[in-house]
Image 1: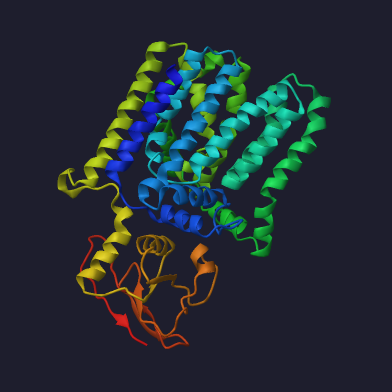
Image 2: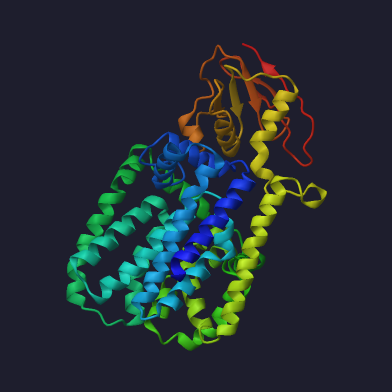
Length: 464
């Protein structure tokens, strides 16, 4: 009974917060919405699954920010239920498994990401169920467990290439843990797992091949190279991970985890978490990293932390209560920001309103957008304006005079489109370069200053 109650409370709370806060789509979110309206087997920076999901959900529920973000709730519930099944498979009682389900859904990182559409919640759901079926496959190698594992790995790769970590670490974890497996039986089904996984991801591989591998190049560019040791970056990353898991759950769980390291399920979970955290810490030391780059590690880490804290029920309850309070506070801040209740005009979602502010500035200067071309310098700016102007006759394109594949919009929009139409140039600075391209269009007469503080702008419109 506890499981459906927890799921219902989580869903209703975040639906209410999303409905009341209703802030506009952030640049990345708007880009994913564009992908959902232009279905393909791949996109510049990500595999295609998020576009397919948004195409389905927006067709069913519409294009409002609230509707666009609904898939995130389903993804987190699927991840939590995967952890629940993983716990039940390892002889935990249904009440303990339900508490692990609650611990995951109450994580501050989950509470925050429940209101932002991204690829992370989707790949986390695949990761959790890969742990479930991966362990079942080890314990009982058969066609069913092998098939489910291959399908989940393939779908996970369609969500985010970070799923490849599971594929790489699976044999390593088995070797390091010295798990008792039926080598012959497991080896017999490995080719079938690989075939299923490859069949599912193959359309995206083919798409990348025909497009000169843009997604793989983008992923490699994110990794970067040596920039010298930066200890502060690594510390900030680790502190962020504590914040994502929740302070008491993270610190207390790690401290008490030594008591349960003898358990196979704990070591199995750590095997799919610690290597990811270690590599991203190194990445932070030598280059840069974002807190969500280790998102896949949190599935196993929250399981390990809860198992450790089961030895100290009082601290486990305190940890989850603190996380729940943080979830309520984050929801309250989102709603308060929407209705301008925060002091001094503070709004943590200010960047979400960039597209709206641009349209307001255009309207204030009595610039009509009907049947005009907006040339924007910046991927997120293009995405936000495409979303905001989805019912308009205006055309939004990426500023890209060299016709380079800068991003998705650099690949799929043409700044020279409809040369007979009036153009409005929009960029992050009021920069004017007296240069003209072969169409005689002023290539940098950017209309808006988006710096801090936001200023009245020198807005000009080019008439061909």
